[in-house]
Image 1 (cartoon, helix red, strand yellow):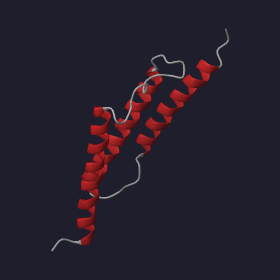
Image 2 (spheres, one colour; image 1 turned 90 degrees about the horizontal axis):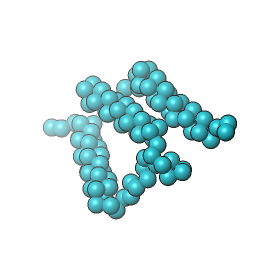
Image 3 (cartoon, rainbow, N blue to C red; image 1 turned 45 degrees about the vertical axis):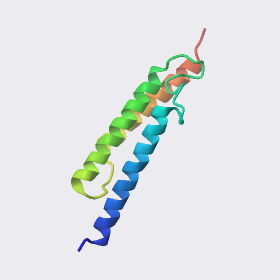
Image 4 (cartoon, helix red, strand yellow; image 1 turned 90 degrees about the vertical axis):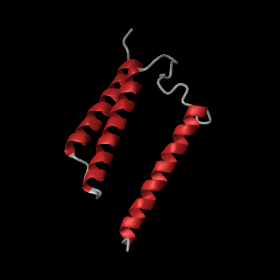
Length: 103
């Protein structure tokens, strides 16, 4: 007999996988527009946005793998919080410096 918590965990995993597949499919077919994802307000390529997305996805992947390995939700490790803080801080500092240039 399968325990209710194991069944709920399996249902949630299937639901999240289906949701991820739907979002990926819609991005690939153009129903969800990702045009301009890496462009700043001026329309130019923004390396800050690339590093922000990469670090966010990296931290998310690391946390998901940790949860799957332990089979339970755990606290977010301090190291991941530091990475997120540094990445978002660098992005916001770049935006601030770009907006307040002394020319």
